[in-house]
Picture 1: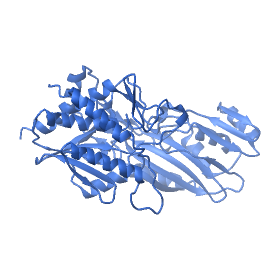
Picture 2: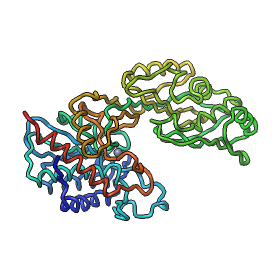
Picture 3: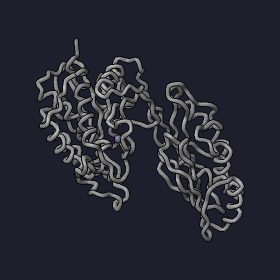
Picture 4: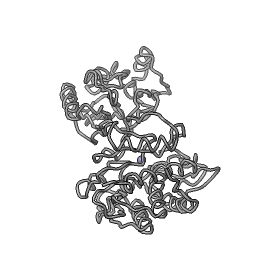
Length: 449
Ligand SMILES: [Zn+2]
């Protein structure tokens, strides 16, 4: 295996990374605004990425509606895809950043800035891996296409449009996960259960669907009785006047079993005092379970493990009640069958099932050509022989067939995506680039037609 990553490539790629990181491409969509769909900044970063690709000799396409773009190189019959995203999550707590989150800054061998790990850093690593092959004079038997999505951190409307309107690559990878490689991802279902309101209980525990809630607050006249019920259940809480706060542990919903759900814990205390179907549902059908077993029985397979279930938000007021739920479904089960079961059970609690978001699962067999090729490159380049992975998280790999998530996060390296002081070690940025160069070489240049 050759080493394509020259000093010049390293230097150019850093400048390119800075161009993308310095644009604060956080979703700024406004109701009623059709174009650009996710705000000016996201549109700007999409155009900048395409401009960069043109400078690298690629042919680009900008979706006139502003949802996605892509860049091609070569005229091969088959197409190898690299699926990236250019939107980022907000900076979080600005005061915790040691550098400007929207100005890529190098410090002690690390490039800091929002998106350096997720996903602008890996995107640039893959793009300059491609550039390194061009510089080395390699010829492309297959076309390579970089697809740039803009709505990964929300609802994937970019990829919905892309897959409906454009050619799907024959195979490829998504540099938006971890090495070695993810070949299976659980299906995702996010939904609301909407039911009757309450004259006596008003509660609002907001939360993002993909996060296990760390706190749940009750304010009202019945704190003493609720506290007593929580004591009996050994639930941790704090009491201050008429405000009762239950504490849990926040984790990503895909690993709900590692967290502690404050909302279901509080619901247990509330149900002892208030009679409401949403509370009954949460205590009788969910409780402390993070695998949905009281709702669905045992939902588990050998490839991706157990179902995860997260009650992410709860709101009850005079008009209605609403529970937000996130489920990650093993690849051997269909979303429809579980949705149907949940619908039936919820109806018995006067709760109506309303779908919020759904993503299909991903499964490219472990012994497929694609997985075997990428794994052998990773192993030879790193000496790390661990097995490819499955995950409850979601990457674009599931948006089309024959795609796997491949890097750029290395095992053992701190995972800083979505956190303050997000950064990527320069050494790992270049190491990922080196792996991607060999990958693109084997997929595109060594076609052996
Ligand atoms: Zn990402």
